[in-house]
Amino acid sequence: MSSGAIWEMVTNPDDSSITVLGMGYIGLPTALGMAELGRRVIGADTDADKMTLIRAGQTPCSEPGVSDLLAKHLRTGRFQPMQDMDAAVRAGTVIFICVGTPPREDGQADLSQVEAVAQVVARNLNRYKLIVEKSTVPVFTGEWLKRTICRYHQVALSGESSRALAESPCAAVIDVASNPEFMREGQALEDFFHPARIICGVESERAREILAALYRPLDRPMIFTDLATAELVKQAANAFLATKVSFINMLADLCEKTGADVTVASRALGLDPRIGPQFLEAGIGFGGACLPKDLRAFVHLAEEQGADFSLLKEVERINRRRVQVFVSKVHGALWVLEGKTVGVLGLAFKPNTDDVRDSVSLKIAKALLEEGCRLRLYDPEAGPNARKELPETPGKVAYCGSALEVASGAHALLLLTGWEEFRRLEWGELKRRMALPILIDGRNFFDPAALRAAGFEYFSIGRP
Image 1 (cartoon, rainbow, N blue to C red):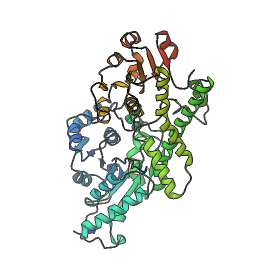
Image 2 (cartoon, rainbow, N blue to C red):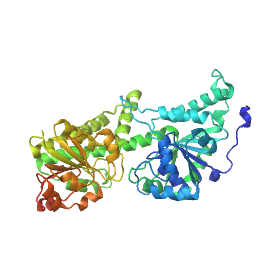
Image 3 (cartoon, rainbow, N blue to C red):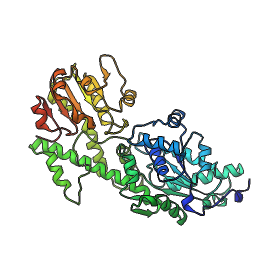
Image 4 (tube, rainbow, N blue to C red):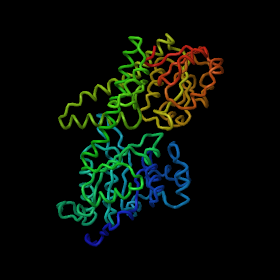
């Protein structure tokens, strides 16, 4: 095989075809968003069950608007689902990497899926390709991606791993870029089409032109930088947001001791333009697949580089304590927990998603189970995923089909995820079904006066 003959260079960035590797919470909305912008997109994943669902027009995860876009672009043909990763890479010019980077026990990001994708790319380099990190990865991942692709491509060409990397044509005819996602679960499409900014770490003018052309229809601010800076921005953003959450929860604890109201304090703080109102809602803490993982990975990276990130260690410690703080609040409301029936409203780590990864709601449920509580659980979307983490157990754990069913015989209801449907609960009927009319609000979701007027003992976070 002639190494010089396989390369077809990109002459028009606007014509670049797109392949998205990984069809999860980020990959599928990204692929469908690009299709909506008029691109022809291949979406690939090695998970056969997931791809069977997608080909049938069904989404493997709950995300508003994704089902409609999937149906639309399966019809238009602009989105093509594919399980064959090799064929998907060969077909694309721009390859978005949207695979998982789960945390290891030491907090470091597990990049095994990213490396596996790099090897797939290496053996399928049939023309110029721009490899784009979309997954959240630590700094230096881009360098390793390029090195790995070129190493394995050289082996594919010659069958020999001993030739120097510099002799391979690979490094000159691929580009690696970092284009971190800032898509919130439950609002992924909104964030794709209306991002506050688009960050692109590039190493060549060619990569810059291609990414600029891809995102031009969105007409949003674009920041071009080097790979390392772009990789750091995503983890830094999530670490800062996590810091805001832990700060307001720390303040909530003080408010409870002093009789102050954290909701009023939060509103006053948020009106300061230097601070802003986002992520200043007191509650049971942050969870999900991003903030906890990225925070730990950022701390691990800092320790490796000899930087002092003790502030972020304290942010994580405060967040871990929120489970204990909330369980203590349940103790304060019910006294003895052994044998009590507790109804839990909300299991997803946030509303509008079925994701229970690192869900604080489930951590609280498990802690109450250890205290001897009987649990009745309900979430509008996350029940099937929650069952994998906390299986149904006769006499101990029961999954219900509605909030009314959860309330039957309960000594207390816990609001742990702020789904909008919970704002429309029939309080009179709930009270009638409960053993005791007690509501413990872990998200400050309800109006205390309204709940007390409905005859409930009401407890919340950081409010008198």
